[in-house]
Image 1 (cartoon, rainbow, N blue to C red):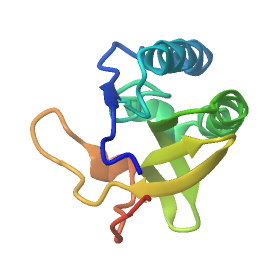
Image 2: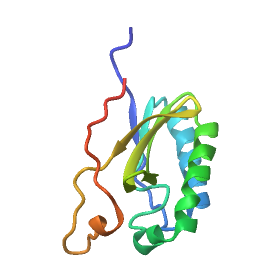
Image 3: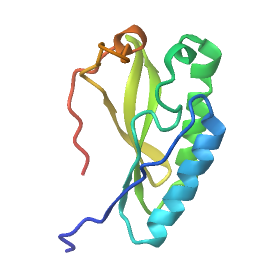
Image 4: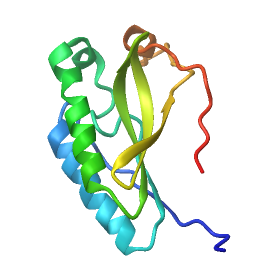
Length: 137
């Protein structure tokens, strides 16, 4: 049994609104992390859409592009777990999510609970807060 876990952090610039370009960058960084022996790769908040997407989130056509981009990531990521930030629709409204992608599928989803709403932050305008913690084995 291996009692260690190798994590990699992908702290890169993910331009706002560039879903396809950001997905390609995510996949490139996944390959780099795998080559370095990482088992889990963590991306920044809303890496897929870029942060902060602000009023792009009010455009249904933009939000509709997230799911196909996420499915493209799922189809391309294996041999490593990637935690990717993205906006996700839910029955209650749009959520600021972190999805865990591994072996071709989303294995877990966490919805941000504490939405800042001061100074330059206006997340309550765009997102519904999450309510539950997420545990991944």
